[in-house]
Image (cartoon, rainbow over all chains, first blue to last red):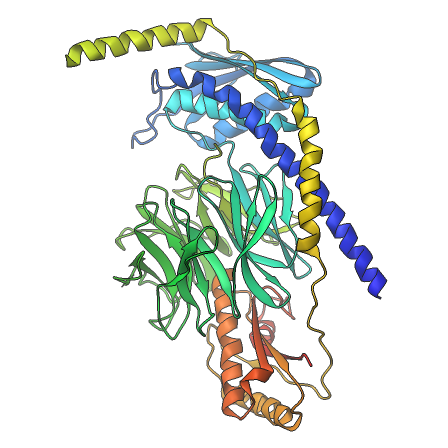
Length: 425
Length: 175
């Protein structure tokens, strides 16, 4: 019996090791691709072709052409998929006229991929961007996403989200493990499989994941350094300890029932300086900082039902945000600070809503079965969430007006609780 | 002065743009050290992961001498119902008779709420059950609590009968 248990432990360990190896390698390689990005920054703001903040946004017709070996044909496909999802381009076949911008991707490949990308303004008949990319084959997708980011930046003047990651939970046989993947659902990697992991957040520099796991009948808060895979226990006490959010200056907000009832606390990223902010008899949970760090949105049942409240980040000036319905939870603050996305129960199902932080302009974004755990992309244009609309829970993306909802995780795994990373620098 | 500055900036920008288009950048190679670097990472791994996955002494769950019935809860609630009192009274009586026994109370929820809130709700259910037992004379030192929220259901069908089974405080004898 004992022996059996040991051999299982060992297997788990070696699988983890392989996973960890691949992650550290991916992170390392990422740096290499990034190096080439910095060269072109000087010319980045030459002309903005699309003002994505404009209410009368006109989609830009763009064509993507490719020359190179079959083996790297994925690259233009990934770039097309990225640009298509951005929602601000019309992708036009390069053989048909009508494009205003054309991107030419040419690849020569062997062990290493060398790609040459030019962007040509067909209206003004001039080349506006040219860059070479080199990367090893195993990070082909990262290379392609870098090309998408560069094209997006050249055309909009803004950072693209195509190299960002989503951390999420995979649930199987009563075990919850922490995974991460590219924003488009590819490159899924297991990060932590020990214990039962529930909540997790990214540090502002994307270098740490902070999460709550139940191990040995204790809910503790851990941080994992994604560079060297060192895990640290940040907070430990009896009861539940659940991370909610992290501020731009690395203050972690969490809910702990160490004194009896779940209350909101803050502490530093290294686990020091914990401070209690709320005091109520009921439940206070899911605290998330506003982007400027001055306020915290959280869930409380102090009014009789779970509702969303906002307070100043020192715990003062508590005011209620949601008034419709009897069950509103899981708040996420938009990167521009204007909106709170949350889960509200309507006709027996959970749906994703958005409301302005002054309690006005309530909008429902989903309507099919249950939709939970919203998280904003770092540019604030998209929301990732989980849904059981296709049977088993999976992760979906949509634009913030509720359009273009699509599943990005396979149907044979139960995936939930997505958390979108900040920009990957 | 301002105009001159702007002019200088424009010249600079134009210069930059031209230079940019003409020259192609130095390709940045995936560093050959990558292969060397990776095994290094693994070594760090080996040091750390065993600590992470080291078998932790799990509280041994034993079958109690007689069945400790779950205390059930209403939807989204954590107050003790009359039928839950009956269940808890018998748990208290049994614990008061068997002074050497410790228990763990697990708080559970049905799947309809959201995960984080349900974890807090399960915690409130477990502590409500604990507080009831303490009021019935059970020593607080003999009771530990844990919440699993909606993560460990005993019933996975989507109907009220099943939801009710999952909304519970469950008692596990630990010593």
